[in-house]
Image (cartoon, rainbow, N blue to C red):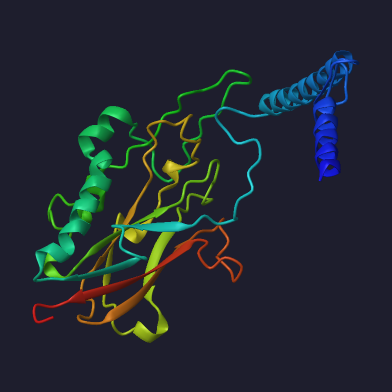
Amino acid sequence: MSGSKEEDRKGSGEWREFFWNPRTHELLGRTATSWGLILLFYLIFYLFLAGMFVLTMYVMLLTLDDYKPTWQDRLATPGMMIRPKGEQLEISFSVSETESWDGFVQNLNTFLAPYNDSYQVQTNDNCVPDQYFIQEDSGEVRNNPKRSCQFNRTMLEDCSGLTDRFYGYSRGQPCILIKLNRVIGMLPGKEGQSPYVSCGAKKEDSDKIGPLAYFPANGTFNLMYYPYYGKRAQVNYTQPLVAVKFLNVSLNTDVNVECKITSNTLAAGGERDKFAGRVSFKLRVNDKQN
């Protein structure tokens, strides 16, 4: 028993001596000089790594442009989106139930507020249609901020919310707004031909969609709104819109609609990306009995 206690004391003493040896003045087996050299090495090592990181970031930032991406890896054809926003691209409402479509109306009112004619006249230019609004820089001199062309809310006519503040939803003739995603420097047409939107029902619903009306006329995105120079360079840019009004869509049934862009410079979306240059959504209008 005494032998066991002696061994415990011996082991404890060895552990204390390893932590701090008063004879050699070693801490954890190293002298103060040894610890100092190790700490100095790691200090210099991590300062070197930090310096390399800062230098790398500095060199990379020198290659960046504040107004235009240095590299653009994008699809040949941009995507499209609709307003109002429905859940999972689904617009469903009942004509007789105001609360079922009031949210869509409020969404459109908010979205179209910057398109009010009075605001557009104050902030943007009245441009020449059917030609690009090119604003090049003069060498190293930046032509910023760049000007933008007016897209007045009245251009949407029956879908502007001005002649019909319910955008047709109260009569079962809903308006859907379509916009093309912004891409810096994109030129979506040539020879004065603007890209245009066309909508139709998918094959199984081809007899349900009824006639459509487009605003502006022919559903075009006029060339004067291009090229887009970026949010920072073109602060007042107003994205062009196309409104589609469904004049006699079948009631009480789902109608699968697809809208696509047609252009003589943008490639049609393929199997690799079915959403390039097109958007699909479901529309359902219920009558007063449903």
